[in-house]
Image 1 (cartoon, rainbow, N blue to C red):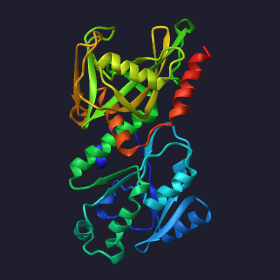
Image 2 (cartoon, rainbow, N blue to C red):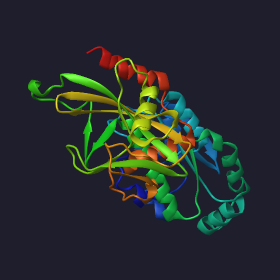
Image 3 (cartoon, one colour):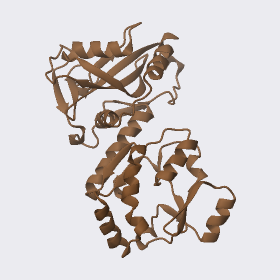
Image 4 (cartoon, rainbow, N blue to C red):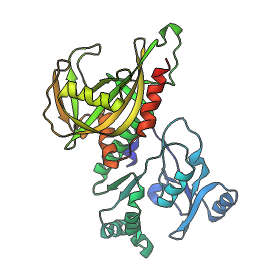
Length: 335
């Protein structure tokens, strides 16, 4: 699992325990291992968000978990730690429960690792299942390689969802944090763009145009919102014009921004479903394809956004609809 996460832009955080490190943990543990006295002293100083005694050892989540950071981070917690962290965390957090296929399978794995298993550890599977609804994602670990790919896909899509990164060709541009050194290069106009991530039977619709400034490329259906037009109505209109499809708009996946020429574009990608998969292309595009995101190369620029659409629909965790669309439109109307 750690190897699968190695290339992701994440800061790996650690929690504290009085449990001695296992042989395979000594070089790269997810815990800071303390003596009982060291743990007690830190607890007395109020350094933990929450503490718990499990399996005869003390475990604690440090307050440093909620310290301001410049980028995303990852940490391993149980459900009590996750609930405590959510109460004090000011930034978005995504939780993933990784569980064994069955209590018997968990018992067998723990026995293989530790030699024996206490009754409390044997009950862990049932306890995790009772709290599964508190997690954003639940993954069953049947194969560690497959599990690693699933976790990477989820994290990648969530990073796209919350980062405000949009892909142009193979190069990402970040706004509004990027600095513009030359005042003459500042945008003089703005526009709102809506894109449709249309899911049908596990596949997302992509259109291909051979014309344009960036040459041949694949893109989600969509276009600009007309002045005074509702963003959802604009999305349905654009999809109808470009593909002939009628769509149900489920909710926004992410918002993004980029500058092209002297225009700054503000955009929303929406998760949608279509009642059919027969596409009638307009003259703007040359071809279309229903693509399973997992089949795309890992470095394909559109892969992460397509995965974000799939995972958002599966989880039902959409961005606030009215807050998102109104904030973007008010920014543009103020120009």
